[in-house]
Length: 447
Image (cartoon, rainbow, N blue to C red):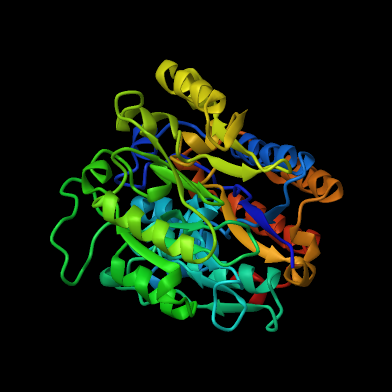
C-alpha cells in the first residue's frame, strides 16, 4: 500500500513573544525582551504550509495551546478569578507568567514521537506525547498535545496513543526533534534512529555548559511503547561538544528523509559504529544508507546554529530526488549559502532548494523542521485522519482570515498580564476548534 509522509505544522499561537525562556537555545535567549509580531509569525508559518501543499506535498495543521495557562498558575498557588490570577502572577512572579504564556508549542517537532505502522508490531501508527520536562514552559503542554493528537488521529483501528513518559529527569523526552527515520520507501519498514544527549544510567559523557534534553532511557521507553523490533532501531548519542555550542536538539545538527541523513561532521558521538549499524539494518530491509556529511571546514557549528541549516526539511519529489527547505537566514550567510549551492549541484539525491522567511519563529529559536511533526500514513490511515486537519485551499483561507481577525501584530512580555489577551486567545481557539472540527480539546472548553 502506498504511503506518504505528511508534515503537520504547528500554527503559531496568539501569545508568541520573546521571553528568552530556553537556556541552551542561543536564538531564544539572544532575542529576549524584543517585541514580537504574533500575526506575522502565524502568517509566515501558513505561507510555508501552503507553498509546500501547492507543490504537491501533503500538509497538515496542528493548533496552538491555550495561553496564558491559567490552570498551571492555579496549581502554583494563585487564586481568584482568571484576571486576578494574572494580576497576582504579574506582580509577584512575572517569570512564571512568562513561562505559562509561552507559544513554544508551535514547534511541534517536540510534540511527540511517531512510528509508522510498517514498523510497529501491531501495525498501527504510534504516537507518544513528549514530556518536555527539561523546560517548565514546555512541560505543561502534554495534556493538550495528547488531546490534539487524539482528535486528529481518532481511530483505534489505525492509531495508538501513549501518554507522556513520567515527569522525571531520567525520562526527559523531547519528541521527534531527536528522532530520525531512514527507509527505502515511506510505506516500507525502515530503521528508526533515536538520538540522545545523555544516559542517566551508565553514561559517562555529557555536555558541561548546556543541558542535554534527551535521555537514552526515554528513547528506549518510547521504542518499547511503539513495539519496535531491535533490528529496526538504532540509538546514538549526540556529540556533547555541539550541545555546548547551542545544538539543543538533534534537528539543529542533522535531518533525515528516505535513506538520506544530512548531517554535520560533528553531530554524533561514535559516529562510525552508529552508521555501520544503520547501514547493516537498512540493508536487511532491502535499502542502503546515504549519509551526506557537511564538513566543519565548509560550515562551522556556530554557522549551523546561527542559520539553522540542518533545521531544514528534506522532502521527496515525484522524480525520486529531494528538495531541501531552509530559512532565509541560510541565504544570508555567505559560507552556508555557498555550501547549499554546491550541495544541490553535487552527486547526491538533493537537487533543489526552497527558501522561506520564518524570521518570527527563527528569532525564538525554531526553523522549518521545528515547525513540523512528520507522520507517515498509508492510504487507509490517511482516510482515517481528521480531514479538517489537512491543509486545503479552503482551510488555508479560513485560517488566514482567522489569524487576521484575532491576532495582535505586536506583543511584549508586559502584555501577557492583560486579561483581555486571555479572552482574545480563548475566543480565537474556540473558533479554531470549530474550523478544524477538533471538539473540546482545551481545558477552558471543558469547564
